Image (tube, rainbow, N blue to C red; front, side, top):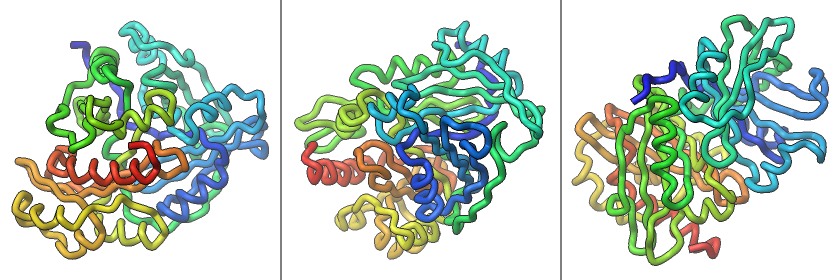
Length: 361
């Protein structure tokens, strides 16, 4: 296997959206992010408006093209509001870009420089599944609020407790999961962290397969899903139908105190999947003792699982836009490194209920 590309961390995730101003408002008011920077006509970029939001070490960018001839409008037409770029911070953009191309990655943009009064950055990009790209950015010669062209524009949210991105999940077309796992293996040097087949992730009606790719430090983890055969349409196939290709299904945001975070999010109007009460009749026999209040976990519909290293708590929002595509996960880990295998059945039955309500099961 190839040596791992020296990507340090996820620097930011950029979304293309139909109205960046309103998207930024939602993530600030509902999810507690601070708006920290802005790029647009007022900063010398007449073709786009972009808002940078931050909470803990998480940075999201929401961008909207402002002219009908902008090619980014094709992305919006096909996919709706969706993740366009998962950007990695690196030390040497040129070296990593050339090495990734040598290993077979398709180019999205050759290395280039950007500068303003705060210094210079170097950036390049390669393509991955669907219309998603991975940018590489080097900030060693830059000391601005975000990237060149952005100005400080602080608008505080009320922090709900998110500290970092735990993982980013992709949905791929049928029989394409292994292709993209190989991509991260051979291009990035990631390893397979864990895998789940359709016996692990299935209900009476639907099934899917999933593998998790991770870098050596495990601070970047990418689960990749594909649909599996079942009596009805898989949730992964529903996503593909509405997204028109592979793409980012959900982003898991870590919190050290999920009960407080979820309580705040519910007060802010965030909608979560409903878990049947029958789940809690048996979960404690499987999971055992935890520190958190069991009644609050049940009240908030939080899922619980355990592996040999500890336990985790997790909950999933409903889609955060009108298409049933992108959603968010809230996750707290107490030693557990897995992804909630024991919760798969309850989770996917809840998702199937939402599919049925939409007429897509």
